[in-house]
Length: 255
Image (cartoon, rainbow, N blue to C red; front, top):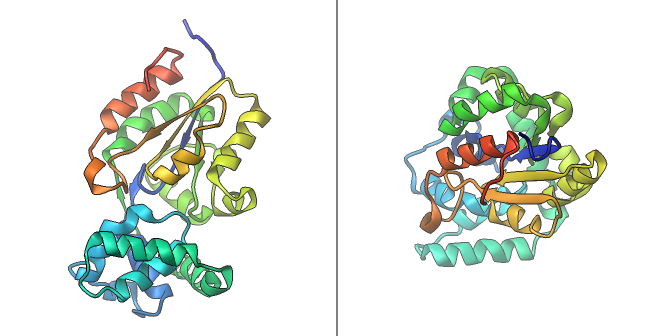
């Protein structure tokens, strides 16, 4: 017997459903002028290694502008010093500095996706979580939302390719994020608008989860298989899936 039928699940995209670190690195390198073709990326380089390790600090796409700058300026210091420098860049950031990069980033992705979709798709890998969550999405399609800073076109392409049948009306991407200024505001608005009784938000980024802690009728779970600090990284996808399954079927769960 269900405790409540008005339960919903909000899912992040990058770092929860898909491993996109190679794709965003190639796009960021194109947007910053480091390369002229995505196929020129060297995924064996120290530059990519540092990008991969620091990816968990990135929120919206414009953050990559400062992450690339930080890595470019790397002088052999520790990861702690790189992290500190990157955060200093963000604290001193202004929209005028990164607007051109941000526009180039999304344009480069659009061109790669449209002109060489096979190569673009080869840079993106679904997590094992996708196989499990697909079963719940098929059964409770209207109960799932995507909340991401990624552009809508690439989200729709990937969802269709991997047969994740989330309603188009339940997909909230970059432009909606920018209107609401944060995932927390976006989710809070949806909870109030839809009169949601209980909900769960799954994200890998601590900053997004922390911003949601005060929202009533919302619990949060971190996807620790995604882009998280090395000391907490683990594959908790099966346990998380089991909790989501219990939750969506109306059972009580411990978070």
